[in-house]
Amino acid sequence: MTHTPTSAQSASASMTAPEAKKLSAVVTRGPNKGTVMKPYRDKNGFFLVSKGSNLRIDATEVSSEADLPSWVALGYGVRMSAKGVAPSLFMPKGLVISST
Image (cartoon, rainbow, N blue to C red; front, side, top):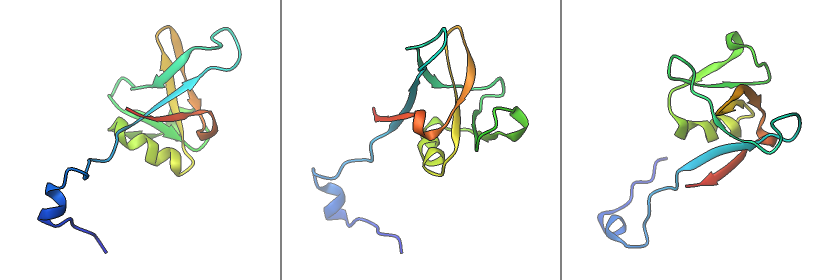
């Protein structure tokens, strides 16, 4: 069952839009330790999620960054990168989801 707010509820100042969520990850080992990683967009413009394989053939393409937290909640990892750092798959336990 879908709930639709009444016009009085919509006009209420207490009603706010859902907060947008952003993903990030921090490299914990190796030469890039401490680097903050952001979701990687491939050459076709998609974000890539996977259940554990870093291979492109096993990845699922996601068109919107806003959809990534939903995929993470389902147990998918997200390819992440930073300037000068190659993309790498980060599983849910290594990702930080924050409000914007």
